Length: 371
Ligand SMILES: *Cc1c(COP(=O)(O)O)cnc(C)c1O
Image (cartoon, rainbow, N blue to C red):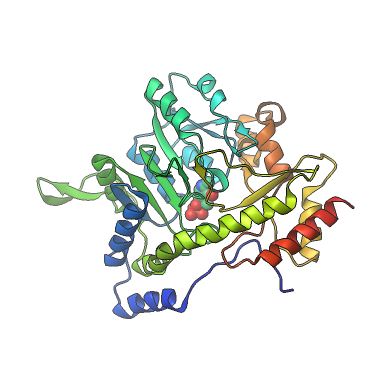
C-alpha cells in the first residue's frame, strides 16, 4: 500500500487550467476572479458579504481591527486552537483570555465563559475546532447580554452548520482559511463573512491600504494593510467550491467508517457530533484516555507503517510565548485542552481517501495501542 498521508490536496486539470488562464491574462492581483469567488461563497453560506484575504491569520487580524479591538481590551477564546487565534490578539495588544474546552466537542466550554468576563472584555472568539461548530446559541446569548462582539474562527469549518445555518453566519464576523490543511485551498488564502454592511466596507478598506472614498472621491481614509488575495489564487478555488458538497459527503462517510471501526475501544475517546450539527470533518481527531500511551511514539510507529498522522491542535496558553508571558497552570485550569494537545491524534482525512485505507489505518492504530 502507498503511503497514506494525513491529508492530500485534490486539484483537477481544470482547476489548474483556470489558474493558467489568469496567469496568461497578466491580471494577477485582486480583480474579477476574487469578486466571483466572494460572490460564490456568499451564496453558498447565505451571508450578505464575503471579503477574500491573503490567509486565515490576516482575516482574524482584519476582524479585530474592523471591530476596533485595541490595547488593553480582553477577548475570550478557547484554550485549544491553532496558535494564530491567540497571536492576532497579541499583535493588536489585546489580552487573550483562555477558556477550557469540552472534550466531547473540542470546542470552548460555554459554561465557563461568563466567569471570565470583565469590564475590559470586548469580544468572544469561538473556534469551530476540527470542523464542528461551537455552541453558537449559548455564545450569542452571553454576547448579547454583555454587549460583546462575536468573531467566529471558522478556519476549519467551511460547510459545517448548526440547524442548517452555516458557520460564519452567526457572529458579527466569520473568519476562514484557504490553507491546504482546510476544506478547499488556494495555497495561502482566506476570507471573512459578515451580514453587516458597514463592517464589510471597513474590512475591504483595511484589506486594501485604507483606500476608500470621501464624498465619492477616492481617499486613503485610514491606515490599512495589504491583505489581498491574488486573482490566480481565487481562480484555483472556483471549482473547488462547486465540489465542496461532494467532498464533505465523502469525508462524512469516512468519519462514519472510522467511528464504526474504533467505537468501543477502551483507550480512545472518539469525536462526537451533537444533534442538529453538521461536522465538516476537516480533522478526524481521537484522544488517548490511557496516560501511559505516548502520543508521539504512536505517530512514529504509524509512520513506520506508512501512515501520516499528527497532533490536532495546540493548547495555546501552554506554548512557550504564552507560558513566559502569562505562566498559567494549564494542567489545573485547562486540563481538557492540555489533554487534547498532548494525547490527541489527527488521523488521515481527505476526500480521495479510500475505505480500505481507513481499515488499514484503524488496524495499525489498534495493533499499536494493544501492544
Ligand atoms: C488554519 C487556522 C488558522 C490560520 O489560517 P492560515 O490561513 O493558515 O493563516 C487560524 N485559526 C484556526 C483555527 C486554524 O485552523
